[in-house]
Amino acid sequence: MKDYCEIIYKNINKKEKYESTIRDVVKECFRTEKLEETNLYISITLTNPEEIEKLNKQYRNIDRPTDVLSFPMFEKGDLEEFIEKSTQADNQNVQADILGDIVISIPRVYEQAEEYGHSFERELAYMVVHGFYHLMGYDHIEESDKKVMREKEE
Image 1 (cartoon, rainbow, N blue to C red):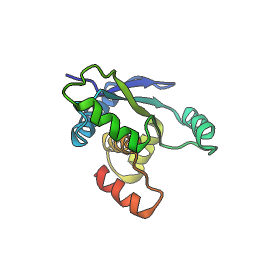
Image 2 (cartoon, rainbow, N blue to C red):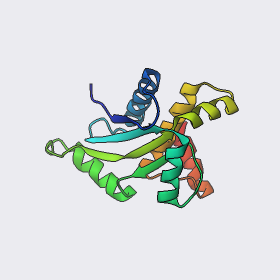
Image 3 (cartoon, rainbow, N blue to C red):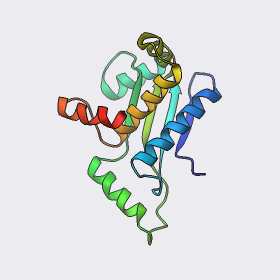
């Protein structure tokens, strides 16, 4: 079975429940967006608030922790072109390529799950899906874009 993601732990303990939830969700994202036949994969780093705050400050100039950060490797048009090329039957030599990086603050996932009154697994799944759709070029700055992204996340 193809593995669609790499999971990295930075300053938190490894747990099987994190990995099984993430792998199931990423697999479903790839299935939903018809990416199973591509050579794309995602890197997901699970970390703590201090680490994600450093990244948020460094890359977004926001000096506070957040729940999830996404770092896409493609512009939306370039991604569509890559997907088309990598799914062509006669183009089997395309190297694996990273769709992007997602960084998730695990303590924040626990906090938000409690705050919103649902399970840790549901909140972690949402963070992964939210990050995935940012990697796919979706955003939620404009209300019209937010509506499209929320529909995708559901």
